[in-house]
Length: 284
Image (cartoon, rainbow, N blue to C red; front, side, top):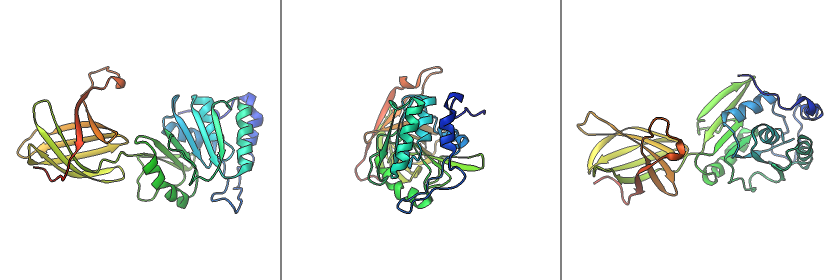
């Protein structure tokens, strides 16, 4: 797919500013991460992978000269916040935002990534270092809402496997979708009076477990978690017909979604059942 230009021809002076120093890292020993500008093709690849669109709130961790935040605001109409420890980069980013006419859509904060709040983000981008990614990982999992997209240039998050991975102009980019916390015992009843129970184990977005139907052991043949969406396929013992349930995690409950009719809008989802956390577990 053809990539859009980072800036219009009228913004050539800013493009030159962005390109300055791109050949080598600029490193201040007081900082955790050297400044290495992200190439335009990679910026676009990151925004494409996260499907950034109007209505998103994007936080760029280690925002440098502001190019990711500014590009997202200018080309995709989103609000953005950049966080960087280096005051020189913050000044550059603010100047670049003014020149591009998006200063009303963006904010640049001088601060430490580890104690600056980014919990309201719907998209997080970063080009840091492996150890910094790992230090941020607990906060990402704990503080961001399920479904938040996190995109990293070049470096992964160790055993937390990405939901998507791509190579753009010689660089790898990775995306994770923050998973809901669904581990534990759940139970619900369907319209026909059948009672379902599951006990789920979770490692990041990987889910497994056990199931019961009307107190009898059943087979949990499939469990898939993507953000706040959980899909379970349960086959009662002795039955050849499995049942598939799709649910959305919401404030400690699983809201079972009825299958949408062809052409029905996503916002028209109907809740067919509600699963609550069960005490004790182990079926019965």
